[in-house]
Length: 114
Image (cartoon, rainbow, N blue to C red; front, side, top):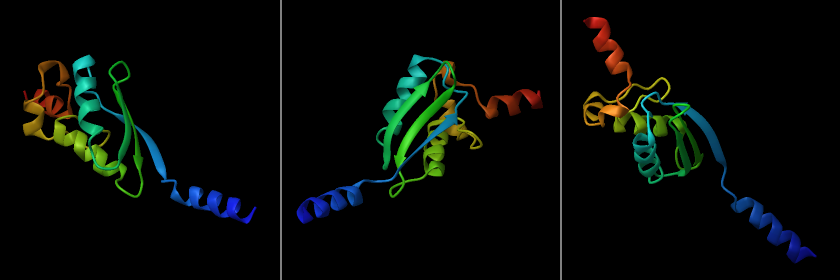
């Protein structure tokens, strides 16, 4: 009985804390954008799961809290060229996105200037 208690306590202590968030990403316009984000973010350190949804223009992500945080994930999206909630896309990376994935604050700022 004592051995069982030690084993179950050790198992619980080994579980990593995982958090989940839904990030607004207006640049996720089609399957190509979805695939691009899914394939990139799944390789980011600490990211457990990624699911981009081009119909809702969101990315749902789960991450290990001892390895990364939501701000790092949003920054990774921005560095890919996508707006991520309140983090604006990197302009140079944005220019490299396929035309179908370009829906960003960068475009809105350009259209206001004209």
